[in-house]
Amino acid sequence: MKEQLESIRKQAVDEISAVGSEAELDALRVKYLGKKGLLTGILRGMGQLSAEERPVVGALANKVREDLENYIAERSAFLKEKELQERLILEKLDVTLPARKKTLGKLHPITQIENRMKEIFLGMGFEIAEGPEIESAYNNFDALNAPADHPSRDFSDTFYITPEVLLRTQTSPVQVRAMRGKQPPIRVISPGRVYRFDEVDATHSPMFHQLEGLVVDKNITMGDLKGTLSIFAKSMFGEETKTRFRPHNFPFTEPSAEVDVSCFVCGGKGCRLCKGEGWIEILGAGMVHPNVLSGCGIDPEVYSGFAFGIGLERVVMIKYNINDMRLLFENDIRFLKQF
Image 1 (cartoon, rainbow, N blue to C red):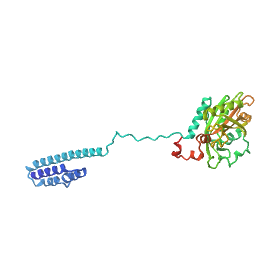
Image 2 (cartoon, rainbow, N blue to C red; image 1 turned 90 degrees about the horizontal axis):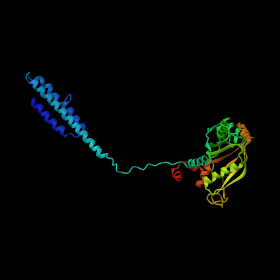
Image 3 (spheres, rainbow, N blue to C red; image 1 turned 90 degrees about the vertical axis):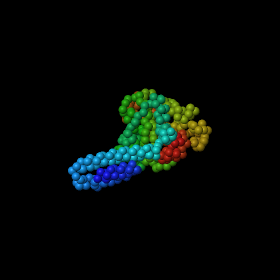
Image 4 (cartoon, rainbow, N blue to C red; image 1 turned 180 degrees about the vertical axis):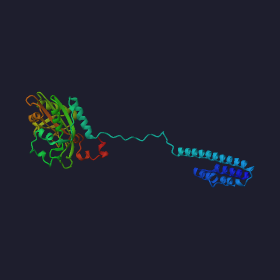
């Protein structure tokens, strides 16, 4: 039996040394040390030995088992290290390669124009005022001197949530909130999204952006309005830009005007951008109507003011010579990365 144990040890060591994977090694462990393994089979025959032989054979059998377990553990550690080294070679990362270029986004052209306008008006002492996009019909119309029969109050022109709640059609309600919130002097701009029941086409959208301005103080005149918008136009479109006021009608201002700027491409001579007229309409403005002032708790006998409103998409399209507003909202990176 001693010879058998030594033979098993030699045979097992040779096979363990030659094995090439953890799976093969585990199979050898079962073959020699498992419940039905070769070493276990020999130990079951120890009952046939004499009393003198059993302790000697038992000690040898335990030594063989211990040796085989050690060989298996050593071979397992060797195979794991070998596998790790092979993986390191196969999965090697060349850190000397240049990193992948990180693609950075940029501000949308509407945001760029809005930021530029904010910068201009903040430089003139204006503050930024904000308000909710879901407004009361009173703030959106009544407080701005728009009577109940005004066309803009029709359900076909405005997105109503209830008869008294709607999506604001302009940022003018922010001006109402500003006048109610504090006493003059007031000098604010109110940029933001507005909503009107317009069909989508090259020049219309049911959602667009405005920036409105309001100044209320003692002795404010049309001259102050003209001077403010002249500075804005020169800062926005170039120092040679001129402004032109044309009479108009808005319910919340009196007198009211449409404001044009001289074409910054042709200098007023006439070109494709200005359609040969030399002037480009950019905004509406006027002196704040006394009814609006008194409705907000401001005495029109003591204070006066002016207001103006600019459509941001219109300025973007003019400045960048874009002929279709829909391009601004289609999120086509090829188009947007030009600006």
